[in-house]
Length: 394
View 1 (cartoon, rainbow, N blue to C red):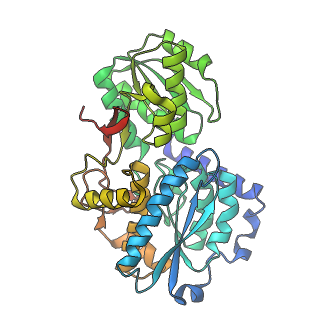
View 2: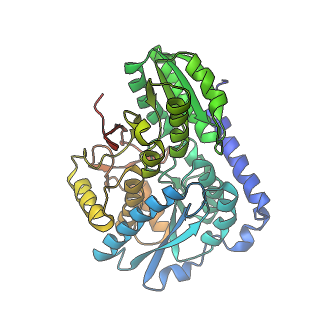
View 3: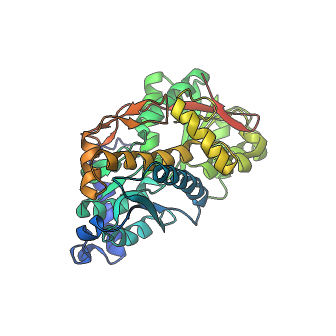
């Protein structure tokens, strides 16, 4: 695979975003839409809002449901504690199905709503990136809390993320794989995120001396992966690694175990109820990189969050619920550091150094002002035991 430079990837994302905007007939009308919002309406009224772009429906709806639980609990708690700058905090939801064209199409509507002081979302980095140029032009913070593509923040200075980058995630992934296997087969999802993630994994695997005896990409909507997994099995790897989303991981795993008779080590999937249900008994022993463990966290405020989440929804939160929850807490913290306006959110992200951290080892975090990514959040490892994800100490 040819090496892709950071600048080349950034240009590609921007071109993709521009194409998506153009296809929606929006690129030439950005100024006319009043994308800066109505500053007067921001100052008036008792409620300010955070815009949410997320997949309520479509193939990624499972993630949208988890996000919404985290968002709603956070807003409930923020308002119970007095809101932001004396105002009530609200959410305005926009279902995009995490599709780049839909993100690009809805972005001008969000940007022109003066009551919206920041935006969170979307699930997939390519979809989020399609909306970022519009928010950047409007001076509206785009907080891509789930966007681990290392180039996500390249659009401009109003694009931020506390999400661990794939460069960090895949180093941890390759390092734990190296402890188990000398020869591996790798399959990965065929999109910008998947290709970037695999590039980082491959670089670290080579440093570790891990031999990749087979590699292949697959399309996100694939239903039969036998054509690529038969040669993966026949390469006789010590382990199979999947770099993709939860449903993809379940399909890869079920095909390997049930159809092809592979019983070796497996690294892949995501910490979702959907993955566990789809993979069933085949998920046992699967290892993934994550950022949070409800049963393993030692951070007191994170433990309190787990209790409150379980009281409200009846189950423990996972990686996706906690990152959504933290996104709202982050932005409320920013608004109370300065003021609940677009300008206030941006200023706080540039200056505050004590954002409350629920992921990893807890504590607090700050942003690297060059990358606009969180400076000090480290991934953890999770393993499926007895049908549940638990923190793994490998």
